[in-house]
Image (cartoon, rainbow, N blue to C red; front, side, top):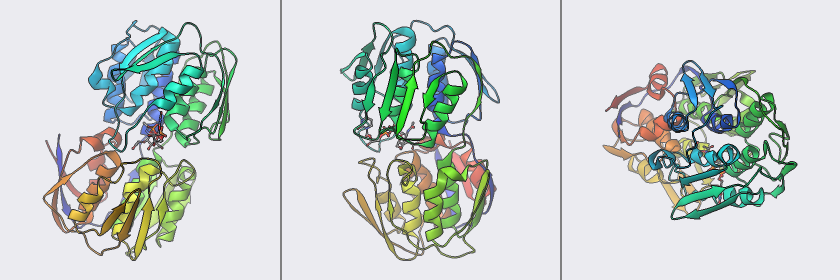
Length: 419
Ligand code: EPZ
């Protein structure tokens, strides 16, 4: 695993181009397995999770050209029912192989998916709803064993628990299903809306993207075409926090501020000056220390869990005290111990952390990254800490942030990657 060596404190100032959304690109790529014509997908971020999907596609015989955009031809798939365990286990998104391959190949055996260690990451809802749509599917010795005799059968799916992943699995299974699938209490994340926009442009019949009720009328086939992935709202939010913690100014370009409403609102409460345009947003601290703000994470449009570590970092160097409550994942505070080693005063009590703002963080020799969003928060902490910090396991960051050190250096960070 490579490391970062970071010297602080620095002020992070300037403009940054936001890349395509990891969490929109992943489901859209798996959805492309349903299409037997050539498609071109633009604005795909160059990150490790996408590299894993490309390897899985090559294993399946998908013809793929990876240049400025991804040109995909999934017209002929090898009858592969097993997959390299290391690939499947390296990303959470591999769970979205099940629906399209049951449609195309009628069968799949694959190990349980991977994903950041922020919780147990069960797949019981995926299993339950695919069974309801007609799949024979179960888990045996940590393998998903699935098959389907014919087409999926549209059904009414009432999601007791809000799940981005399970909503996506149901959508992918229902595209060519007999009759209509209605999902109640569907996840409303913008990335799901982007997936639905992509599928409808390719000929699907889906209504209600971005709402709690999604209606998918089965169609006979999808056609090829071109699609541009939405920008990464979590990357943009991360850079806004970078300015907030270093009392700087950052303009995020290629960003839709509509997807960041709650994050921008909370940043305004810290005393930041926020400006927005059609495809940009900026934050200016005017060299002031932020005020602490309470956060409760929840399903979109509530505060995103993927911004929780970044905002907790902001709170721990802000004026005053605050509470951050995590309601989505049961183990998303692993980074707190690392921040306290740098001088933060954060106390964990079940799914809440209590932050007492401190004015300064100090570098410490060994910081261990634990998951994607925690890792980037520790990198930002090291940028404002006094001294030199070495962060281990930064491969997590490469899973979700494109050219991260180049972007941070352009904003004034003193950061170097050690192989
Ligand atoms: C997606 O994960 C995202 N990952 C996560 O982003 C994001 O944090 C999460 O949605 C919530 O917004 C991708 O899109 C690749 P869920 P997912 O199903 O689909 C429980 C990042 O940093 N659950 O909405 O795994 C689950 O344990 C990542 O980019 C079940 O109980 O999230 C969690 O407590 C981290 N059974 C809650 O539901 C299931 O079958 C929400 O999970 C599925 C989920």
